[in-house]
Image (tube, rainbow over all chains, first blue to last red; front, side):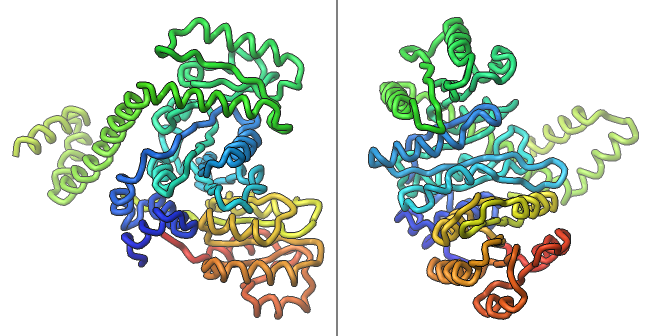
Amino acid sequence: MIEIDELVKQVLRGDQRCISKTITLIENGSPGAREAIALLHPHTGGAAIIGITGPTGVGKSTLVEKLVKEFRGRGRTVGVVAVDPTSPFSGGAFLGDRVRMQGLSADEGVFIRSMATRGSHGGLPRTLRDVVKVLDAAGKDVVMVETVGAGQSDVEIMRVAETVVVMLSPGLGDEIQALKAGMMEIGDIFVVNKVDRPNADKTVLDIRSILNMKTEELGWRPPVVKTVALSGEGVDELLDEIRRHREHLKSGPLDERRRRKAESEIEEAIRQRATEHILRALKRSGRFEEVVRRILTLEADPYSAVDELLTQMLKS
Amino acid sequence: MSSNRKIKVLVAKPGLDSHDRGAKIIARAFRDAGMEVIYTGLRQSPEQIVVAALQEDIDVLALSILSGAHMPLFTAIMERLRARMISDILVIGGGIIPEEDIPELKKIGIREIFGPGTPVNEVVRFVQENANQRG
C-alpha cells in the first residue's frame, strides 16, 4: 500500500507513474481515493479545462492530437482524458482514442489517459471531475477532455469543462437533426471539421443561423471555426478562439461557472454519501426489510413508505 | 465508494507490421470479456508502448508481432518496463513467433506466448486467471 501523502507529493511534482496510480485509485474508488482528492484539491484551479465533444466519426481524436501539438508549440503542458463508452452487455470497453494520439507518447509534457464510462447514468464517468483534478494539481496548463456527444453526456461536459468545443462535420445526414438542442446550448466554440468535403459551407451557415437565434451569454458570441483536422488546417485559429474564450471567462463568467460546478459537486457528493449512509443504517436496523414488506403487501407505495421513514430518521 | 475494478489491457503492435487484424480480434475478445482495452495502433516503438502502459496503468500488456523482430523488440520493452518500475504487469505475446524462441522470451519476462490459431478464449481465460489487479 503506497502512502497517500507520498503519492500526492509526487503527483504535485508531476511524476507520471504516481499521477497514473492516483488516477486509478480515484477511478476505482479504492481506499485512499478520498484522502488523495482532499490533499489534491487545494492545488487545483491552475489548468484551463477544455471539453471537446461531438458525434462519433467527426474527427475529435485527430483534432485533439493537433491541438495538443499546437499547445506544446506554445510552451504549454497538456493532460488529455479520452472517454469512451462501456458496453452495457459485457461491461468492457474498447478505448480507441489513444490510437490517434500515440505520436505524442514521446513528449514528456503530455499525459494521456483513457477512461470508460462504466455505466454511469449521465453518460460521463462518475469520477471524471476528480481525474481532471489530478492532472490539474499535477501542474498541467491545459486539460482536454474528449467525449462522445450523445444524449446526456452533451450537457454533462458543461459541469466538467470551462470551455466547451462542439465538433461537427458536413455529411452527417440532416445537419439540423444533428444539431440537437442540447449541443447548441453547451457550445462555447463550434468547429466544422472536414471542410474539404462538399456541403461544408452549408453546414457552417446552418450552425451560424441557429446560433443567431439563441440568446448569448453576455459578451460572448460562439464562433464557428472551420478545420481539416487531418492536415492541421484551422487548428491555430481554433487555439486562438480557445484563448479568447479563456480571457472572456477570466473577466467574470469563470467565477460563475466555478460556483455552479462547486454546487453540482456538492449535490453529487450529498446524493452519493446520503444514499450510502441511509441504506447502511436501514439495513443494519432491519427497517429496510420492514419497508420491503410494506410494499409487497401493498400496505404502502415505495415513495410514501420512504418519506415516512426519512421523516422518522431525521427527527431522531 | 463502491469498487469498480476492471482488468485493463494494452494491446500493442511493436515494430513494422503492416496489418493488425489479429490484434483487433483479440482486443475485441478482451472487451467482450468485460475488460477495458486500449489499442496502440501500428508501428509502435518500445518507448511509445511503455509510456502508454505507464500512463494508462494497465494490468496486462499484450504484444502482437508478425515481423519476426520479437527478440530485440520484446527485450527492449521489458527493459523499459523495469526502468519505469512497472515490470510487475502481466506481459504476453502473440503472432508469428517460432517455438524455439519461446523459452528465451519467457526468461526475459514474457509470461506466455500464443501462436496463430490459438483459440481466442484460451488467451482471454489466461489473462483472467493471471492478471494482477491494481488500485
